[in-house]
Image (cartoon, rainbow over all chains, first blue to last red; front, side, top):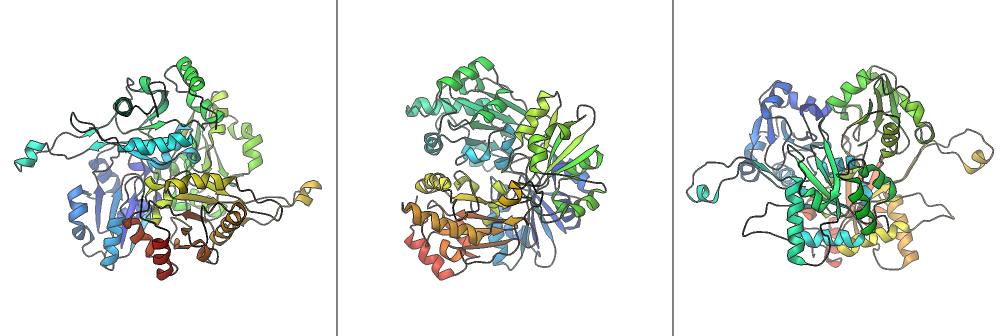
Length: 285
Length: 285
């Protein structure tokens, strides 16, 4: 049996009781370690589980999945995923491959950022489609996300923006020379995301958002030191929210008063928040 | 401290390790028991936790929240919520009330149907806003949900439809006579939801969906006997998916091939599925 086990969002104790039972009993335990991270390292997980954990990088999952699945028709294999196994990154390909090999799968759900973002007090009912933001470079500033956010904005809906992480990436030079040297991991911050959004708007000039648009930054959702900040994109582009992971929500105009009361608690600046709320005609439908 | 603890979706073992620690140590433990249910009863939870649990009905939460919060500035109170505390039903009002009383709150996230629905293999990125479906009566068939689903359909996005549950409801007669007699609980089925959707379309006649529109029914998401069915709304209006809870996803046209491959595994009828996929122009963007 292949078990896909969600680990939740913050630390080793966010696994469910059922998930922990599976991990303790499985023959092999893999940790998917390239689309998201827990706020604790692998060693801590191994101590907590009392057993070794194999780190599964993108290459192993995408091209070596048969190694992961080896023998799983006879023994139990646990594949651990930060968040929920079918959350922001889905592992349907692994499940489909298992099925082709005649291996059954079971999923142990857990919190995902896609629902965990409800901690902002913004109602999940009022969210449109979720988008991802990649790191811009000097020469590559993809703006396809703009069109999807625009659809949400035009309907007055909130948008959850998931922020890029770069783990175990090679520089172009090292890749070209075939050197297996990896860059230090990078995690996009709320400030970088807000800055990139302003950059895209300047390029597109469709007025979908601007420096005064309201947004909420969320850091380390579900952890003891979770941090939420509400403010304009301009304000958020200068905010320091500390260690990863970060996410951002662009506020939709259908936001209602209970949502306003909640997020205003953690406004960077209550006055600019109120002014932007009023001028942006938030709260209308 | 007020702890809002997510219980996840299926049974007593879906609580997280961290959540369980909180429940074991809290002075009082409440279970929110009117917006969703676990697939096990309160007695089973009490045995698992080794302590009593107080059932919190709508009245207690909405008008008696100060009883729940009594003394919580000095002792720990755990408020258990099926799914995630900020998922489909948010408990921001309780947190705001706690704050007014000078009581700190912490949230222990867990799986919510809003992310758990990813078990269908449909990508959460491709979902628009979520809607709720209430039980129609002879005289009351609210169709405001139609307008929101329409927005999703026009963008080609999937829609998660959450289905009504009626727990501890009085009949009109018993309410009028002040008799505290409650009706047996009712949980909407996928078949009822699909039937009501066809009824609304017949009334609205805007052609947003029809009997051949594809949808996925999900029952007992996250449980050992989880069941998924894909088919046309006509087919789903006749399907029997067993015990609650049920949810439905109306498929959006932006659905892509990996999603198709995944849901076709559990099609009611492969041939009608393929015909509807083709005729409905699914897979185009």
